[in-house]
Image 1 (cartoon, rainbow, N blue to C red):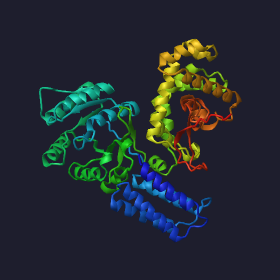
Image 2 (image 1 turned 135 degrees about the vertical axis):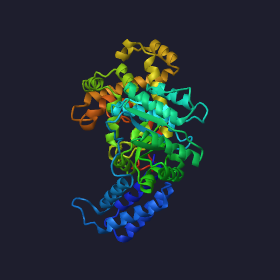
Image 3 (image 1 turned 30 degrees about the vertical axis):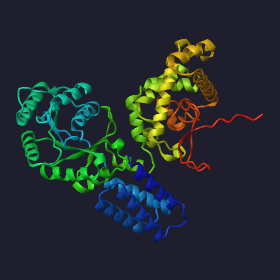
Image 4 (image 1 turned 120 degrees about the vertical axis):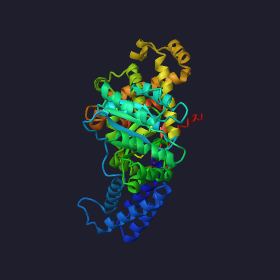
Amino acid sequence: MFDSLSDKLKNTLRNLGGRGKLTPEHVDAALREIRMALLEADVNYKVAKDFVESVRVKAEGEEVWKGLKPHEQVVKIVYDELVALMGGTSSRLVFTRQAPNVVMIVGLQGSGKTTSTGKISRWLRENQERKPLLVSVDVYRPAARAQLKVVGDAVNIPVYEAPETNDPLTLVKGAVKHAQETGYDTLMIDTAGRLHVDEELMVELEQIKGETKPIEVLFVADAMTGQDAVRSAEVFHERVGITGVVLTKMDGDARGGAALSIRHVIGQPVKFVGVGEKYDAIEPFYPDRIAQRILGMGDVLSLVESVQGKIDEQEAQEQLLKMTRNQFTLEDFQKQLGQFKQLGSMSKLMKMLPEQMTGGMRITDEQSEMVDHQMKRTEAIIGSMTRQEKNDHRIIDASRKTRIAGGSGSSISEVNQLLRQYEQMKKMMAKMNSGGLFGGMARKMAGGLAGGLGNMLGSGPMGMLGNGAAIDHDDEPNGSSGKIRKKKRHKKRR
């Protein structure tokens, strides 16, 4: 997400850094580029205009901050204004002691309301220790209520059904009573949608709100619809009074105009963003972290939270200890691959790391798919080995390699290459010490990330996934743009 805007803003601010002294003309030129970048990212015109003007006023009025160069001041101002534009701080759902607390999910048809209802409920159960009950009042769309039941079963959260009635108000009354009687502290109402805003829909939503008195009314919008999502949010807010926004498909929105505009236009914060199809692919919206990602500062906090939530800490420590003692086996590497896949795609992880840490490496979704494919092939090769072979690769002779290649659907050369890379990795680990690659952040994350994300594409365990691929750096003299490329193998002339 925000790929296009991020590239343009980083280039603009990087150009400022190349100047020894900033003049008003330099700042004006940069602000014009920033304004154009925002508009191209489908940010609301007035929002873009106000943003640039606010940056201009602060850039001209600020005294020189101690320790910051002029262009760094501009970067700091842009960062602060991005954070303020998106709401300043993360907005959690705030619950009261009443039972149940009602959360209404509203939005247009096709925006992802039903799936978001399940995702948010799952997140509340795991992160805010809530006990949710789901109910669908979409009595118009065929199988809509059955769809919520499927979602509820997938996230292991019960659904109030009452198949004997098709009246939305009767349904919510029954759901509230059932929640009170059975101890559910949160009732998530998946409301009906339309292909467009109409009076009948709004009247129904107003009636449900009046009956249930929700603590939250969350508007769900498809981020990829850009300013259409913002305009729909305005209408819903005027009629129903929404308290927050959930943006779906943020992982597929390279522009990010809706996320940057909606808070400024309607005065209500984005509370969650959907970042994938899986039921755990939803995140609270942190304006400061998003601003850091946009400006290439990374989002290490979210990455660490993801690692902590999906990787067993004790097992990570045990594997880290094996690494530092050079006892890391192919069986351990197989476990690492399984853990690593839980964290998401390679492109997503790379975007969460600061540019200083990645050394200018860049990876697109297409290149990420290539790495993911190689991970599967590597898993298949190791999976075809016996436990004895995984723990002692030296016993793998020619006949064993033939069996492993046949069992994994790979070639003997691929098996040989994996073993060579593993041996190289072992030699590298033998030279490590506790203050080297396993120090600092890598020490905290290495167990879960196969030696630390900083070197996962280099010579560490994750480097074994390259299988002949290399990653270019932005600062290489060959003019590469930071893409994965295949190493060309030239035969020596005799």
